[in-house]
Image (tube, rainbow, N blue to C red; front, side):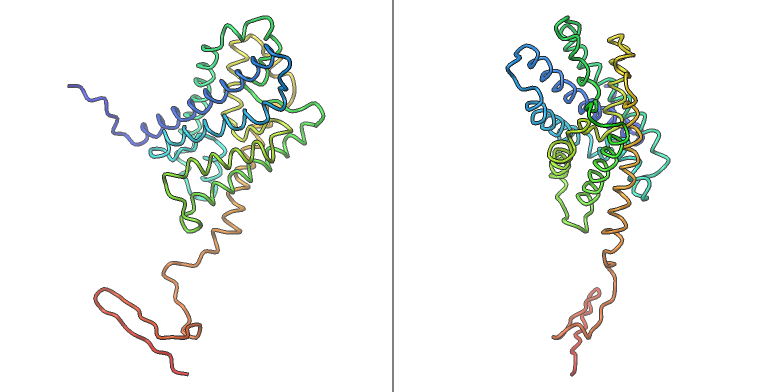
Length: 289
């Protein structure tokens, strides 16, 4: 019997990042489409109110399940901002960055392709012609400038990565491995909905925004509309910069200050007798006043 097992770790990591990002983007973009089409079909539905609740919940759940699929193999980055941020503080090998980037952007492209295949007839329906913006890519509100949107994404992604660094730091709260996807999903939910979802939808992920945006421009023959403003580069630049800032903030403010596990201690700080063990030998030290 022919074995289909892949033994190369690099290939397995690429496949995990690709498949995880594909799941994330497909489920998320499909949720965007569902909300857009439902609100067009029923004008009585408050689109803004519905999207501000359902969309972040859908994306956060999509991230959680995608992490459960890929996390045990590749670490479940699924986001170039996470890969770059962790590499900048030495927690990820720089030699793997390009490979992870390629898997993430390609996975996001294929994920949006699957969404398009499922909702193709609705996307080309005349009554939905003005509803495709926001299904694949994010967009900023008209009341703000591109500079404000850039600051929004730098700050939001910085907080997101700072929280992720805290969650995966075993010397902090030591979150059990099985609960890491849930904790990160909640962090994503908070950053998208409760804090930074208003200005531009909280992309937080360059691959999640750019790849679906490029796909929709090709598939819907709508390049001018998809790239109609200067906003399209904001999730790329803002998220990468924010990811680096968030990782470094956690490293400089929290992580660097954990005491060494083998550090010595001052006997003057102890009141009672102290027992120190090494192998089969135990030494009992008593302090005399």
